Amino acid sequence: AALVCVCYHSICRNLHASFAKHNYHMQSLKSSSLCAALCKREFRHYFSSSVYLTNTIMGPILGTILAGILYFTDLDSLQSTFAAQLPFSVDFPSLIPILEAGILSMMPTTCAALSLEGKHWWISQSLPLPEKLILDAKLLMYLLLALPFYVLTEIFLIGALKPDTATLLWTLFLPAAFLAFSAVYGLAVNLHFPVLNWENEVSVVKQSVSSVLGGLGSLILTVLCVLGSALTPSRYLHLFQLSLCLLISVCTAVLYRRITGKNKL
Picture (cartoon, helix red, strand yellow):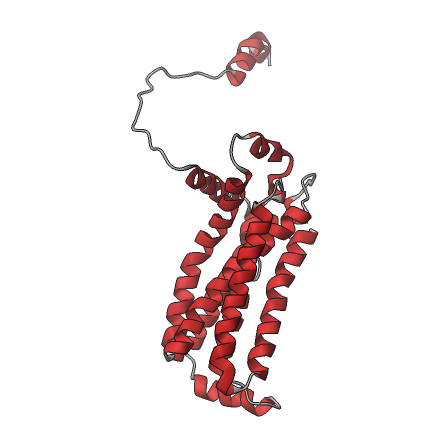
């Protein structure tokens, strides 16, 4: 104790002091576009939050697992089982891409991407960058995150369904259209219902209005697509599938122009 009392000031000074080394050497510098830099920033923010990651990555993981299970399942027996329980005939292979698309896009990251900026949102607002570029980076991060799961899901589905040309296009384009729509829709909802004065990330990711509405959007779209596909006569099924993909794509483009064409931030 006496020794500590004598050396107390020097101990405190050394504990709180920082030493800088002067042997720094300039290495090679890498340049990237503004959108790429903002997208990397979004990825760093995403992987630094365990609550954000675990609640938004489960949809793509579950969709990929389900597609893998279907690959190793006898679809004929599964279809006969479902057909025996339904009061009307259903083209089972045409429903599988809808269910997969709904699960893959179940909880987009864009539903909470803006709110998670929190009290630091003024930093993004003060950057000399177009507002559209900041929003594009958030959309691009989600699409790049979902891309590997989408590719694996498509490989499993194509191997399981062994589709013809029309069903192959339906299997490829519908999940992609769902992912694009859920990304833009989630960001639009978050722009209308931002929560920036939060104290805990759980309140933003799980309990905010934007996260609830963002998840419901994909669910409602899935239910409507399933009902439409089930009630459409078989001779018009391919026409319905093409019209549905075009309709979702047009709605996505219109919504994207709406949220990026004006001063929203």
